[in-house]
Length: 201
Image (cartoon, rainbow, N blue to C red; front, side, top):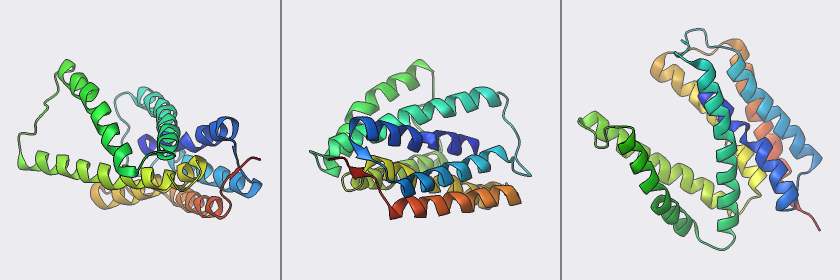
């Protein structure tokens, strides 16, 4: 949950940058939804699952997750700017063309196994590909029609989905506090959607 929640602090960064540089001024009710969504997501992270086990370096993991929020925010803003002049397909194609070579180089330098060795491994690769096409493709499509701040808040449903899938796949049961956090996050997303940011005049 932490690895999913902490990167999703992105809406705070995106909202501030969109307000200052893109002149997308948030409405008061949007800010209420933003606070509720981020607060609910944070509550899910702060309340440890009853059956979860901490990793070997939890603080390093949290630090990397927080840094992801910055990069994820920059991604939202870059795609938002690109979608003002280009189609979703074009943006996704160039993102893959530009992003794939440095990722391959990193994998080689870290002596990672590049090609899967089993059918299960190939299934995971196919699943990741489909998740990228439909997940990031949907975000890119939405960023051509919504303010960046609104789209970034909407993805806060991810921690809730991650919590549900963690239970179904890994039997990591959510505590009552985490469940309440998930409900608050969803409520915040709904509220934020009712009053998206508007361009300043």
